[in-house]
View 1 (cartoon, rainbow, N blue to C red):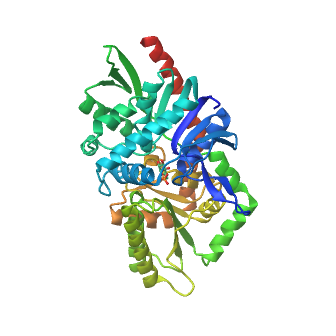
View 2 (spheres, protein in one colour):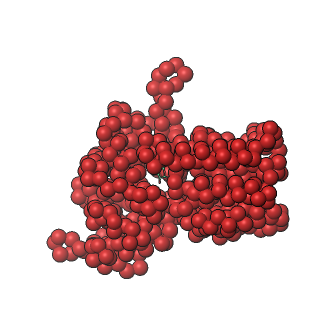
View 3 (cartoon, rainbow, N blue to C red):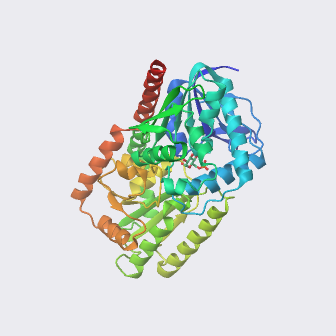
Length: 474
Ligand code: G6P
């Protein structure tokens, strides 16, 4: 097998398996935050990507796709149930998002997580050239850095955590809290979205492992009495902003935006929510606020429509099934109470769309509602901003989304405060074009000046320099 000097290890491959028009299996580039973020980096570096093809029991040989060398890892139906749906998405995901849903701690899930993490580590070790850089992605693979270091001490290992890292009081619930910290500390550089996430991690390391931490550095004692260092620091992720700008300029995309507005009856204001259907996103809070504004007559369906795209996600996990039922009940109630023959209150779409359609929606929307109860970053907020070439439109942004640290001129809200959220929606709906312009220009500057290429460059630069210094120090 060909060896690569640069290897990404992520739960998912950046492609989906589909059946093409002739009935043959084929691959299609898949959307999604992580993939969107890493695709350009991978293409430029000509690297390998180790990941799961997204379906159980799929056995595929490594292949090249769009300039990337893809190394598929087979997961059995039981692996998917215990490692992916179970430990990753029913234990770690809710725990790391401030226990919005109750995490379930099951020992058979943990055992599967260890086993599958080991297989990812072995696959990465087998494609990495001597002295290669391996970049491990996200919470599904927290044990991989240490496993890789043990197998291949020659490698430079980075890890990026795309979701929040919780406060110590919550983290300490995890029965395997020490093993997870030790797993992550196998990396030379451990990247987080926010300064607060890196701080929470360092505190957990101090409290649980009693290692010394100083600024962003962590000193890890080794069995032979020496120490090695790791860096835990914030590297906020971003988007391929130019790609959104290019799409927003396209005549067909702009025509589609006008078509969307017309199909909604040309309301004065379109509010937009775009999320994976996930309990962290505060979709119900947003709907509650909107429903009350309609009920109180502060907004009317003739003037305002809320478009809610909720893309299907993790549909076999119980908390997600319950959430879908709750949301669909709420949409039905609000629409039943307020729709007219010509106008709808909420246009709800439980579907995923290609990027062109998303940009058309961003162009059609006067107000973007990001009301997450907790979110690692929220790239949708950045996509909306990047697409607004006319410097108009209002971003309503939860202070609990990582993006709030950077996007200071958005209208900040606490989604738990329904009255505050309602007032913010009214402020957004009535905001003067001049104020929209002032705010949006500053937001756009930030997103264009710090895009996903800067993110990966910053991370990889820190990894390369830190590794060299570490060598010199030890
Ligand atoms: C978040 C996570 C990613 C994950 C994505 C979609 O953005 O940080 O690691 O890939 O959600 O979730 P899924 O479970 O479908 O991969």
